Image (cartoon, rainbow, N blue to C red):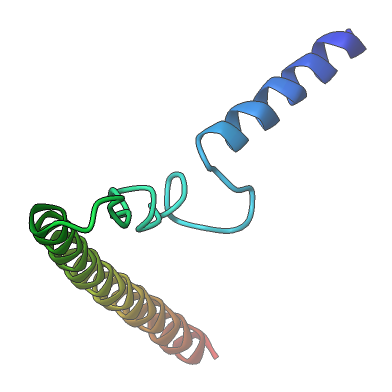
Length: 107
């Protein structure tokens, strides 16, 4: 029985690490994707010819654009999270106010 518990706990820990899930308090499922995990990082070409230089410039420009897209999406995510957190706070404040009115009405 103890072996089954240990095996189950080990599998859960391994699975959570493999999908990037943390047992810390979070509302996200898994971890937020890093920029470097989503894009190809341009490498300096070996050649010094015009074609290599123009291809490298195109790769760097694409990399910068991908960053700008990632950054804009991250800011949208932050704004959405802040909006939802503020909405949750308003809902809690409403419940607290209703509770206080109730308590005052029975005194």
